[in-house]
Image 1 (cartoon, rainbow, N blue to C red):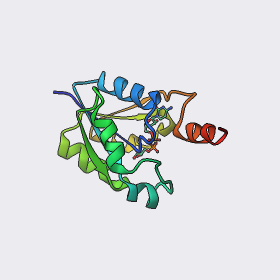
Image 2 (cartoon, rainbow, N blue to C red; image 1 turned 45 degrees about the vertical axis):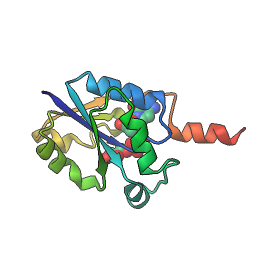
Image 3 (spheres, rainbow, N blue to C red; image 1 turned 180 degrees about the vertical axis):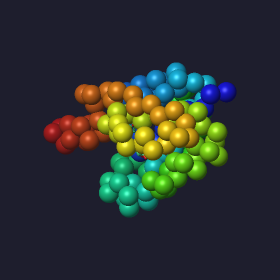
Length: 130
Ligand code: C2G
């Protein structure tokens, strides 16, 4: 079974996230999502998600492409996760291109094109105008 892993906050779920899940899953058989915890968002990413971790996790559980969710609590957990989960492919959107090449000694690293016209920030900004 070919395992894929990806990480993110996935706040205010939108089709850009779902397309990423779909394309990541298409690379293998089982997709693991490292979902950024609220604490990791606040401390490391300096951003606060609109939905808290439990709600963001619930949305993911309903998605066909996602095999399982685990918490992303630090930038440094990826290497351990790849080994412990027996991951074959690490996937991120290409806004991260190059940032995770250091993982290529452990598994294949793939950057998928972002869906350009949508983002959680854009949704939040657009809603402010209503
Ligand atoms: N994404 C995408 N298209 C969009 C928006 C996001 O393909 N329109 C992808 C991003 O490239 C990323 C994933 O969806 O691979 C999750 O995006 P975010 O929730 O914004 O996560 P991010 O803040 O990039 O944090 O350790 C990695 C980090 O947790 C990633």
